[in-house]
Length: 471
Ligand code: SAH
Ligand code: SF4
Ligand code: F3S
Image (cartoon, rainbow, N blue to C red; front, side, top):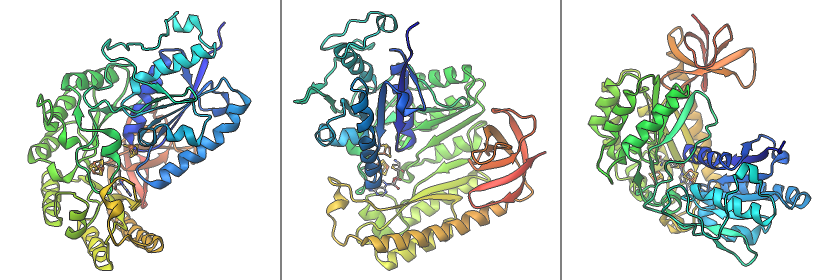
């Protein structure tokens, strides 16, 4: 019996990165790697990285350091860095940490297998039974047959490939999904918006949309494999199809809503600048489309929104939120907010607090502005001191937490449809699931199983979770 090769994948960042990692795991499975939760037991360690804020990068550098002793103990261990930070840093990562074997950029998901096989071959690790005797050559075409490997080697012989393929999509490969109920489905890659604080457009390239039939087919396959819920992913789903013009996002959402057997359809992220009335109507008229829109406002004053290059104004955002709420009863609106953007004054900050109190989001992800070199905001004047950024973040969170609690309090004694996910993280006697509005509900476990839809009466609403009981 051959010993099963094991891969440990550590993933940081947004849903897109988790979705990419599932595709990488699929590629690795096709050459005999099974995913493990135990880093020390792995033959291959991969970190799929994020660079959206400095703190994300710091965490990755910490992990890279930790892996050094594993590599010293086992020189045959294969260690690679992929994702946004790999794209941004390239071979500088290897210069800093020579125990890295390869660095692959964000559009190289389908190349992973080839590089890993080459390293295996060099180390005499090729398991012919598992690899079916695949020939490993210097430039190997992948299944698309079209593109050749473009990796070069640094002076130590490490592989580095951060060419950003802006036209091709990493479609058609195997996917090894992590969950069993809920599937991430990328619908487009890249971003064209260039918000002045954001690194994403530089590391993910220009917007490119998958073909609608490919997306629908992936949803159908997921449903056939028992998945009940899909989340359609893109940096700005509202731009879907602007390139190929085969369908816009509203059209796509409708097609996915109509897939036989699908129970819940989610999507993210929506940029407020181009969320159309047609889309609002599609969500309102949908059957399985969940009543939750993640609609990041980022800031609540026109001066800062303009400096951020967000295109919309406070007034146009407010009007959009009103149209959404008028058309979709009980919709949950959530947002992302950044404090400490360059030039932010106390006045701007108070304006944002007032805006928050007016819009009343169900919940918000709040971030401290992090300088990303190469982005326009990094060199803007009047950078905000760290202590002040932290103080404003705390104030902002306090205001939002109060609003979240008040909104959740209104759900007391209501009955919510919950998709059961499984045991709660903190208490195995309690189970958890989500409402259509994406709120986490905790309830005592009876006979229900993961994937069941239950009616749960909310008995103890809290800021972050709702406690209840099955009725
Ligand atoms: N495309 C999505 C999300 C991109 S990244 C969108 O536009 O909403 C997720 C969030 O990280 C952003 O919404 C923003 O709030 C935050 N973010 C991006 N760059 C940042 C930076 N330099 N500092 C702090 N937060 C940042
Ligand atoms: Fe970044 Fe803006 Fe693109 Fe979102 S829309 S990924 S915040 S540039
Ligand atoms: Fe991070 Fe890249 Fe997502 S920078 S937030 S993992 S697109």
